[in-house]
Length: 131
Image (cartoon, rainbow, N blue to C red; front, side, top):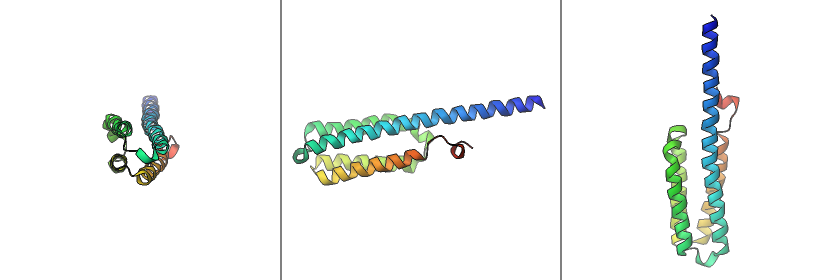
C-alpha cells in the first residue's frame, strides 16, 4: 500500500514539474514575440511614410524566422490552430510592411499582440490547467 502512494506522489510531482516547464517555455516564447512586435510597431510608427525601408522589411523577416525556430517545440505543446493564426498574422505584417501599408501593418501588429496576450492566458499555471 505504501508503495502505491509513493508512486502516486512521484507521478504527481513529475506532472506538476512538467507543467511548470511547459508553461515557462510557452510564456518565454510568446513574450519574446510580443516584445518583438511592440518594437516593430514603434519602428513603423516612427517611419510612417516609409515603412517599406530595407531595415524594417529585414526586421519583419527576422522576427518571422526567429519565430520559426521556436515553433518546433511549441507544436508539441499547444494547438496547431493557434500557431497557424500567429503564422498568418506574421505573414500579413510582412506583406503590409513590404507594400508600405502603414495603417494595415499597424492594426495587424496590434491585433496579433492582443491575440497573443489572450492566447497566453490559456497556458498559465493553474489547477485547472494541470489536472
